[in-house]
Image 1 (cartoon, rainbow, N blue to C red):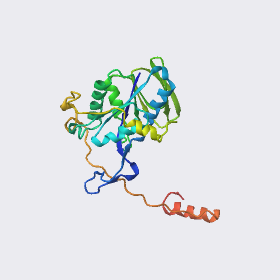
Image 2 (tube, rainbow, N blue to C red):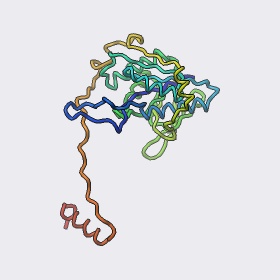
Image 3 (cartoon, rainbow, N blue to C red):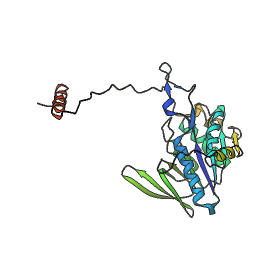
Image 4 (cartoon, helix red, strand yellow):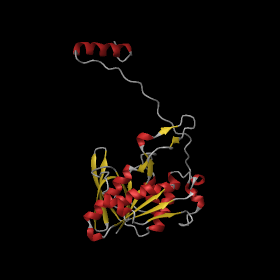
Amino acid sequence: MKIVVLAKQVPEADKVAVDPETGTLIREGVTSILNPYCEYALDQAAKLKVDYPELEIEVIAISMGPPQAKMALLRCLELGADKGYLLSDRKFAGSDVWATSTAIKEGVANLVPEFDLILAGKQAIDGDTAQVPAEIAEQLGVPQITYGVDVKINNKRVEVKREVETGYQILSARMPALVTMSKGNNIRRIPSMRAVLDARKKPLEVFSADDLNIDEEKIGLSASPTQVDKIFAPPSKTGGEIVDGSDPKVAARKLFEYLKVNGFLRM
């Protein structure tokens, strides 16, 4: 059985800043990491491999990005993936979610055509669009289940515990299928030293658009129906007023006066 895990390299969220003049992200000097939700998907794949040894599961991590995105795939190999494939080409530059999903779909179809299950993070922490996995599923023509927190395999079906606003749902789909993962009980693990060393021996290959025979007109900026015009940080919020509650009567009087002065009370 083959499980594909989609991985993305992203900047550390707490280190990102926006250039006020250009409206673009300042990436210089910012540490890049494996997207946490992709890591949850990989953790789920690793658990399935342990839970179903009879299926002889092989985990293949696939990413699209610049050459340095190999580090995100190396992290996947350290955490249990058996091999990694990086789609890297200047022709991919400027791809929006649709062009990105097209490129990754072609990568999956060419490199792991016999896949049984695709696991992906529910979203990336840099763009937060949550669109790419769904579009990949549509382009591959396979069923999709989103916001999973636990996955089980039953014969040729995948059963997913899915989080919703009111609790959880249990959904089932025939494989091949695609599932996006929320955090749930999955964790961001620290690999052992042995796993780190072994990862350097696992296959990690890079493929260009030409290697995969991807139509140049379907990828990159020119093939992207949406384009980012500007990125900007939200305005800073001013601090609120703190009312000392040690004396309830005084606190209540101050609160009443505040509501009255600011027009929140109709007298």
